[in-house]
Length: 130
Image 1 (tube, rainbow, N blue to C red):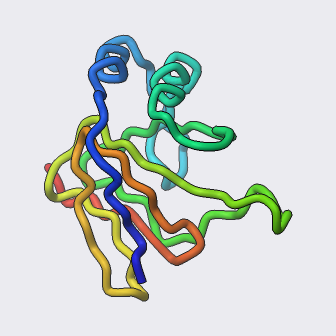
Image 2 (image 1 turned 135 degrees about the horizontal axis):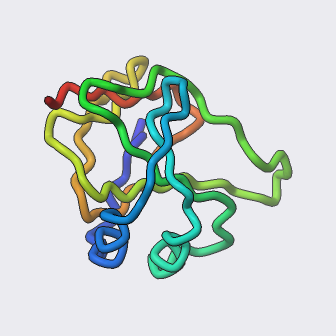
């Protein structure tokens, strides 16, 4: 099963320029710290993705904080709508991986690349970086 598809490099400079003034809030849960995505919408729209972008998350994981195994819910139930989930890591470390435990897949997603990820399979983020 192809759970992670590396689409190609993207210019993350505009998004990186926003990070110094981005305020992240602890969600109090296991999904890391989140920021207001509004300033990042122009960057997301510049990626040239087909269709409509329905959501945007700007997330920060503290050292050692991962995201536990889960399956993301579908937003649309219509057979005419095909959902895709994309990730663009901005700052990362080789010891941070996306893992699909039932499929035996574990991969580091490099900063500056656009990835399409399978969200209907059990997946997690494992953060072993200091």
